[in-house]
Image (spheres, one colour):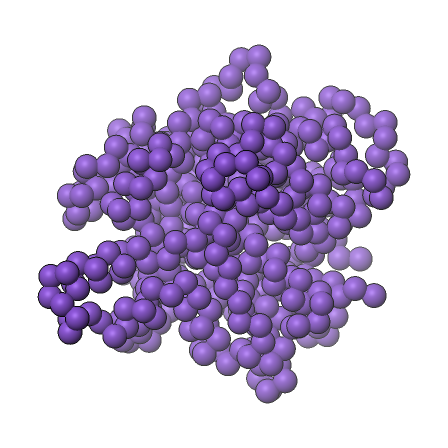
Length: 445
């Protein structure tokens, strides 16, 4: 019998706050973590057309106040060795392990516990500053810690060393699909016997004038709401005109089901399906048909052995871009009309066509912005919490849906909704045409 994988711990850092409780409460309240980039001590921000971003709130109040303070999570001096995304990783890993109540004490437990955490871009500021230092002052002024701070897998290394985990030591980097790929890959490590426990997720901390400049030049960023940052990220809304860059991290503890039951762990949900696909279309834009994300959703549902009509909620990748939101919306509706193909759930035929207009689908990026490599992990956690508490998180800033358009589903506009969820999907897509979907189940039978 195939090994089953469950989620037993959660950790979050987002523009809404530090910690699962703070972030979830503010998300349900319809709050936004998007702020202005002006007056942040770097005049270079002023030259970028998009002047909004989702920064993690910082303050001396620390975790208990939902604020980031690095000293709570890393040892003195480690800030020199760790980039910001690594520091975020240390925090969410600690949060998730504490929530799971899991400590690997024996050598065997350490050998059977691994990490799979990735980042999309990493520390762009470190790269920039190191190049400037070399150009200005030469070789001897380059820090010997430059390479460790820049390597994208270094966060996994630090988590492994802190807790002594000797199982799979894996780092994913697939642009904005990174966090979800990390969780899906880690679940497969457990399923196929490489580990019993995995800490998995994504982290990103690359907001800077340089990264914003690159995305702005690619015409990807929101530019029409600089005077009202909280309204800038508006998935599915008629007036959406680009994504808002955010930072943060998310991590989950995954366990083999029997392992979790034997230690009496609290189980949030089961990972019952994981689908991956490629658009084979364009380096940044999805196909208008939504074929790529449709394939990954079908694959995840097929693995789960259920029908599309069993899915109560989709946490969409929708980033607030014209093309991307429309393509994913089209894919979700096609999923309900077309099914998943041969070999699954014979009673699928006869589904009423109008069910495609009754999908519960929301994008939490309205509140957090787009956390790039961390997005999939953070949004998986939101999906897990939606199942646990029976609350669909809202898509904020929906003011106008295009009249007579394809946007006819329930996008959970502006206010959370009560809903008894048994199965849900979480989607991610990334530049290069990469897509992934997780299918989660609430009831562990």
